[in-house]
Length: 209
Ligand SMILES: [Zn+2]
Image (tube, rainbow, N blue to C red):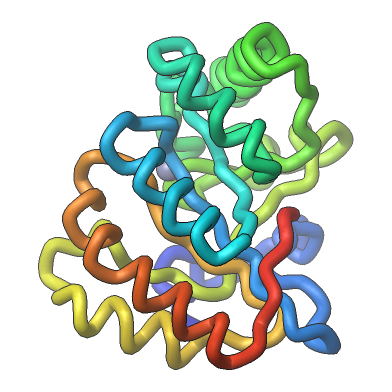
């Protein structure tokens, strides 16, 4: 599993309730893009998806929704899924439960005000969420993780490696993690068109979470 290096060696029971992938019985891939909306990359992603009639789920940072409301609306109007990724992109391990929960609710509020939605899907920034935070979040949200990490944020990984690894691990029901933010813009622009053509050629459908 490519995500293992992000997860503590002893996985608490509560992590069993997280969603790491969807059914392996259907030829469907769940593309996800975290950290947007960010002009210059989110619109690029939308365009590449639309060209192939594909959909994805965007885990948005509340502060970016506040800065770029029209771009958030474009994501929604294209029929993509939208999830909560906290307001300030908080690291769960470094923040109190109260502050963490408050930041999630603040993100939820801006999504409601801007897009008139109340998402049920939450993804913890950096995949870092404590057991006690999980217990507080799970009654209201589904915690969506991933089984394929593109590694698009890794400055030591070439675009070629990012593409080949992401292709290699993609299978039925995979949840693929990309980012639509400034630090990953260059690599995502190189990798995404070819990756989307690859899943199309392999006969996968895409769906929102
Ligand atoms: Zn993030």
